[in-house]
Image 1 (spheres, rainbow, N blue to C red):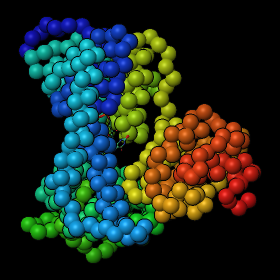
Image 2 (cartoon, protein in one colour):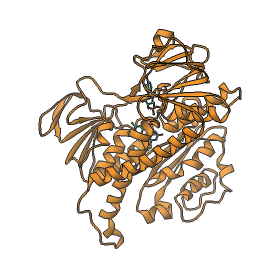
Image 3 (cartoon, rainbow, N blue to C red):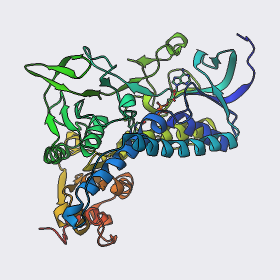
Image 4 (cartoon, helix red, strand yellow):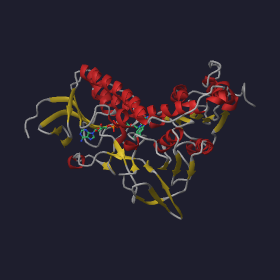
Length: 459
Ligand SMILES: Cc1cc2nc3c(=O)[nH]c(=O)nc-3n(C[C@H](O)[C@H](O)[C@H](O)COP(=O)(O)OP(=O)(O)OC[C@H]3O[C@@H](n4cnc5c(N)ncnc54)[C@H](O)[C@@H]3O)c2cc1C
C-alpha cells in the first residue's frame, strides 16, 4: 500500500448512495474538490435495491389491479398471467436509465469517483486498495442494509427485500415478516400480482410509526383486498425445505408458505469501516451526530441512513446538501426529521408529514384534529378509493401534522409539507383554491373545515 496520499481533497465521501452522491454534487457545485468512494454502484440502495425498483414493481402491480378491475368501469379486461421476467426487465430499464443519467452528472461535475471498498484510517484519511485519499473533511455515507431477527436467516426461501426484488416468478403464497413500510409495500405488490399474502407484525398495528388512524384504515383496506394481517404476533423460528417455508409463531400454530420476506428494519453499514478505531462515537453501529451532522471528531460528518432517524432517500439528499454547504462555509438550515415528508406506496397509499396526534399531545394539551373523508371527494370517488385526510392543529393554530391515506394520496404530500414546514394555519390555507375535481381538493376541504367553513363536509 502506498504510504503517500495521492491528493488532498476538500471532501472525501465514503458511500455513493443518496446521501453521499448528493453531498458530492453540491460540494462540486460550490467549487470544492471531491473524492466519492463506492464499493458497489453509484446510486446506492435507493436506485438499485430500494425506492426505484420497488416503485416500478408497485406500478406493475397497479396495472394488474386496473386490468383485473376493468369490468367495474365497463371495460372488459382481465389478467391472464404475470410475466415476471418482463416486469423485471421494465424495472431494470427504469433503473438503468436513471443510473446512466446519474453517472453523467457525477462525471461532468468533476468529482473523482473511486471504485472500491473504503477503510477509514484517520479523521483525514481513507484507504481504497492501494490508494490513500486525504481529505480536509470526511463524510461517512455508508447507508443501511436489511437485518433479521434471531432464529431467522436469509437464504433459500427466506428473502430480504434485495432477493424479493429479483424474484422471477410470483410466489403462490408469501408470509411477510414485518408490517413496516417495506413489508406493506411488498405485501401490496405481491397481492396485486396474485399471491396469497399474510403479514406478521410483532407490534399491535401495521405501519406503527404512522398515526393510529392510518394503521386502522390500512388494515381495513388490506383485509378487503384479501391480505391477512396478524398483529401482536411473534415469530420464533423458521424452517424450510425444497417446497416451502414454515414459520414458528409464539403461542400459535406454525404457518407455511412458498416464501418468507423478512422486513424487520434496516441496520447501519459501519462494521469494519474503521470508525471505532479512529474514535467516532457510534451507537449499535449508527453514527451519532449533532444537528449539524457533525460527529464527535472535527471535520468528520455523517449523512443518510447511518444517522439515527428516518431512513429515507430524500432525507439523505437533504443531509448531503446540508453538509456540503456547511463545509463550503455557508449557513444552511439544519435538516429536521419532523418536516420530512413520508410516503408509503402500498395500495392504498399513505402520505404524512409532521406530528401524529399522540406526538402533538405530548407537549400540547390544546391540540385539535379534523378528519376529512375521501367519501366527499369527487376524484377519489371516480377512482373508487376510500380513505381520509387527517389534520393535527396545535393550540396556537398551526397545522403540525397531516396524515393521508387513499389511492394516489402520495401525490398530495407536496402541499402538506409546505403547510407544515411553513407553519401554516387552516385560515392561511382556506383561501387557497384547489382545482376541482382533484384529490388535492380533499386537502383544501380539510383545511376549510378546520377553519370553520366546511364545504363538502358536515360542520
Ligand atoms: C426496499 C426498499 C425500498 C425503499 N423505498 C424508499 C422510498 O420509496 N422512498 C425513500 O425515500 N426511501 C426508500 N428507501 C430507503 C432509501 O433507499 C434509503 O434511505 C437511502 O438509500 C439511504 O441513502 P444512504 O446514502 O444513506 O445509503 P445507501 O443508499 O445505502 O448508500 C450507501 C452506499 O455506501 C456504499 N458503501 C458502504 N460501505 C462502503 C465502504 N466501506 N466503501 C465504499 N462504499 C461503501 C454502499 O455500497 C452503498 O452504495 C427504500 C429502501 C429499501 C431497502
